[in-house]
Image (tube, one colour):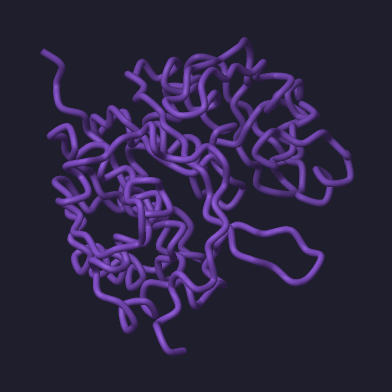
Length: 316
């Protein structure tokens, strides 16, 4: 008998939750709850300059308002640095970690090709530094720590199908800890999902290209990887002649703090379920009602342009 899945929602509390965040969590929640599974809530607040506890607490209030509950957490990544250091030490013991002294300006000046998710493919400039050279450079600036990326990593996405990368060519050696001491997303997310028993990750397709790096980390750390299901992005309309852009926290009208004053929880969920192909029209529905009829086959593959009138109250 197959064990019930364990999903997760891992927002970055850097501002109010917007419809793009909620769309991803709704599908993650529906996918797991439709099969009797559990949800882990984790706040990805690694960077103290960009995130705040207050935003994390606001996100939790929004989820409670919508009826999107969770079973474990909330976990706060800012409180898990000791665990990330253990994982970093394990990778270092394998001879795979080295200091990188390149500045952001130097990385841009190198004119390196871009990885599929928009990151630069690192040239490997600091990979062959001798201990003496690294020691001399460390007197001038603190280094970031990079992981040597070798071999191939691939998987079959639950929505978009097979993806494989040559890690050295397609993403390059990637950062595990920044020069300011903040642990990097790739290390923290793989370490946490493994430690928390997550078996299914549902997230936006903009992170599709990051997945092989995370699978590489799972393998090196001896962690069991989850299944991955990436979903289309919600896009906002732009000005004349400009392409649509993905929703972000600057889209204030799409923020839950605004929408809660305009619509009921059931109206918000029903409209998002309609965009996800789960309802034939944008009608009010509870989370539990939607879980009972959820089907991945109905979720679109193409990104979804958010109709301006869908979240505009009648008569405005």
